[in-house]
Image 1 (tube, rainbow, N blue to C red):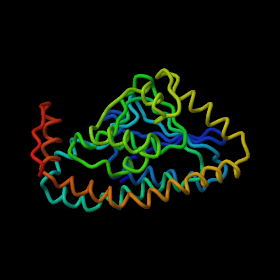
Image 2: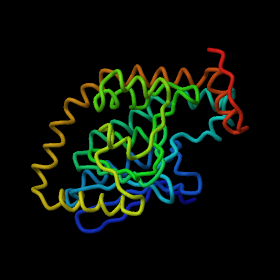
Image 3: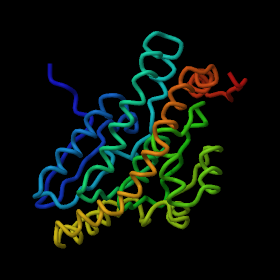
Image 4: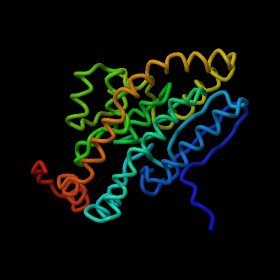
Length: 265
C-alpha cells in the first residue's frame, strides 16, 4: 500500500517548493505530516544543488495547525495517551529539522496559519504572508501549552512580554499586523504571496551558496541554543495538557460550536 503524501515537492532549477498537502482540511499537521515534512526538508538540505526552499500550503490555507477532529476523537482513550507520550519526540524531530536545515527556507504563508501552522511559519528564515490571512499561536484556546516551538521563537522575534500576551491569550491577528509587528518579514495580497516568495528565493539562489548556508547556520547557532534551553520543558508541558480535561472540553466544544467551560483540570 502506497503511503499517502502529506507533503509534495516541486523543483525548478536551484529552488524547491515544499507544499503541505491536506487542502480539504486546511492542511492540519498529523503524525504523518510531521514525519514527511521533517524528512523532506532534511533530504533537500543534503542536496547541494537546491539553494532555496519555499514552504507553502495547498489550497486556501497555509496550515490550520493540529487536527481538532482527531484530538476530540482520541481524548480519554488509550490512543490519546499513546499520542501524548509520542508528542515530544515527534515535535522535537520536526522543529529541530527546520533549524538543522542549512538551505534557506522561505515561508509563503498563503492563508491562515494557526497553532502549529503559525509555529512552522515563524521558524522559516524569511516569510511572506497574505494580507487577509489569520495568524496566531492558538494552542491555549484548545487547552494546550504552546510547547512545539512557539515558546522559543516568539520571544526572540518580539520580546518576552509581547510573546506572552500572544501565547497566553491565543491572540489572532491578520497578515498586515503580523508584518507590522515584525513576526513575519513581508506582507502581500493573497494572489501575490507565492510570487514574492519566489522572488526572494531566486535572489538567494543567485548568491554564493556556501556563504548563504553558513550565514544562516551562524545565526541559527544562537536560536538553537535557546531551543535547547526551552523546548524539552515546553513540549513536555504541552503533552501533559493533552491529558487534561480542559483540552478534551476545548476540542469537543469546537466541534459542537459552543463556548467551552474550563475548570482547570
